[in-house]
Image (cartoon, rainbow, N blue to C red; front, side, top):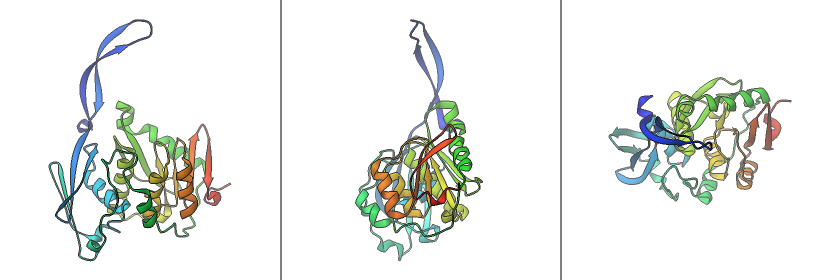
Length: 257
């Protein structure tokens, strides 16, 4: 956990006029150069943990691999991650507009719409209590509680069993790490749901749609484009999960009542 933050001195000001110098824990940020099939692909800004999971999820949510079996090798050396795909997967040419991975528009919307084939019928049914408890668990993630400087994501089963969780300075990164970790564990995405911190715009909803997660939920709001993406691809979008209630914006049939 110590690799997640650094200690810095800061001045804390109070509205009473009091000022104190404190030694605080600040969440750490690092850079990772991702090379794909021997060529520089993108530089990501992220927290320095679960790097392999991040790269796997990053490639999967962008449709560049369908699973771990599409990779010949994945090597992490210092600040560089080198992923080499098999010959069949190399036919998928990166076409997405990529920015630093902490950016809210790190995936081109039109390209993502072409990648998201839609959610297959899975029979997933989740109770409101499972959703409330699961989203509530985001605030209990250890680095967030210590620094307040991370976004969190957790993948759950329909009964609320914890499948994989991650924290990162970027909310997109946290989701990519969860997707990558779940890939390594062989999780069936169609029988899971995702709790994510922050808003649910279209590029966040589309991450779930690309990998086949049928429900995404957040303590925050969904945007109009996020709801449109959910409606279009059959994904249940849930927001404002707090204080024992939630808003379901589309496809409510997956929530028990």
